Image (cartoon, rainbow, N blue to C red; front, side, top):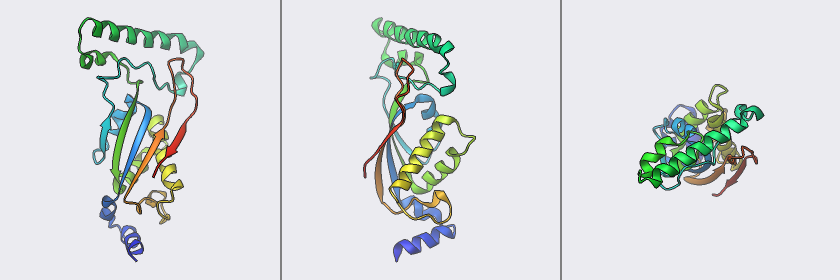
Length: 193
């Protein structure tokens, strides 16, 4: 039927059919540095938690390579200095949208991202690559795993061809739980269809 015809068309290179299927992801606990990379995917739509209303965010993503005990005190000093500067500036009447310029790329954020299936395949092909930056690569792996777990469609030979049967799917991905004490409580993933 229709699904078989769609699979055949996609295998033949008619990928525009994939543009009629969309995926929405609620992503929580990723850094603003990751956000900068993610928004390069221009065929996706994003709604991002505003920094105007969250203050100086000491809840940060710390790369494993920075979790060296010799760096711990320096990292805490920087985080405390950023919080102090932000609070002092806003206390002196500096608007929050201006004080946020002093916040860190490591600060966690939450966003809603919607991609059509064609762009999602492209995103996974680029961001699951071993040359991709670690944080966005982990996000891509988790998104891919969720898509596989939900058995959205059977593979047509390439692992990135698994995505095209459901009209809209909603997934919740909570990737990192780092606190200013620089402890990783591990990744967790929840999905909702």
